[in-house]
Structure formats: C-alpha cells, structure tokens
Image (cartoon, rainbow, N blue to C red):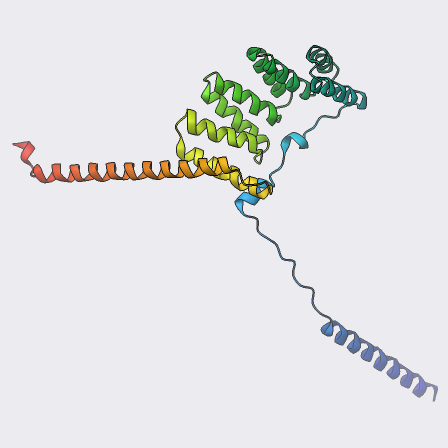
Length: 253
C-alpha cells in the first residue's frame, strides 16, 4: 500500500513539474521580444566632427600650484601687463617643462610686440614640448605664411588638423593658403566646404563670407575644368587631323 502511495505521489510531483514547465514556456513565448539595438551609421563628416582631440587626450599632469600660477599669468596677460606676464610665464617654463601653454602665451605676446622671430621661436618651442598643441601649429603656420614660407605653413596647418581634425580655424586657414597663396583652387574648395559642414554641425550661424567664398570658388573651379576639357578636346582633334594628313608609311620613303 505504501508503495502505491509513493508511486502516486511521484506521479503527482512529475505532473506538477511538467505543468510548471509548460506555464514557464508559455510565458516565455508570450513575452515580447526585445527589439534589436539600432546602430546609426555616421556620415564621414559626422565622424570627422567627432574625431578625437589628441591635445586634450594627452594633457600632462600638472601640480595644482602650477595650475594656479598659470591662471594668474593669464590674468596678467589679459590686463596687458606684458612685462610682468612674460616673467611669470618664463618662470612656469622652468617649473613645468612639460606644459606647452606658457610658450604659446609667450608667442602671442611677442606677436603683439611685433617681435615675429621671437614669436616663431616660442611657437616652435610650444610644439617641441607638445606636438599636439594645435593652437601653436595654427599660429606658427600663419606667421610662416606671412613670411612667404607657404609649404612650411601648409605643413603646420596639416599638423594642427592631425592633432584635431575638427579644429575649424586651422582648416579655414589652410583653405585660404591653398586658394590665395598656392593656387590650388580644387583643394581649397574642399576645405571651405568642410569648414561650412563643421560649422553647421557645431550649430553656428551661417557664415555669409564663407558662403560667398564657396560660391565664387565653385564658379572658378567649374570654369577651369571646362577650359581643361576644351584644351583636351582641341589637342585630340589636332592629333586626329595630323594622323589623317600623314598617310601610313609616308615617312619611310
């Protein structure tokens, strides 16, 4: 009798477990499936806009007291107390040799004082201390452009953009260099258009001057392409005419 009761109990337990499993399966089937995560593919310009800023990513560790002294030096610069500011900044170059900011500020002061050679040297030192200082590259490039050193200027604008591709001032300056000083209109147009796209992504008001430059350069580039096409067609027609005028083998007699 006990054996029968045990067998009956075992049957009941098995039945209950089976029912529980079915209920669990029903719930699983009835539960709404999670929607797959939608991955939004960025456009090339959006990727450029979100490109990493190497200058910020590679900031040196600076002691709090040095940071305080640098802030004080910047305040002195803004107050136009330039001699005192230079002394403060030079002291910082010794106290914090891995900090490029003091050299950048010294370059700016030298530029205000029309000491262009000193400004160039200070910007170069800022870059030596931190190759990712795109501010220094951009300002150095502009001085080099003014000195007529266009290839060197181009190199430093490009290095500024290597440190941060979304740095609009260097990209705009590079476009101006290519357009007005190096005669590379097609490349300049691409840079101007990139500047306009970055400004749009930065939600800045429309730059009418930039819009005018793009429109003017677009016309010039289109006109130049048509001129080259006409010349190529004329050259091809001339070659064809020469071949018709010279019978095969005539030159071998």
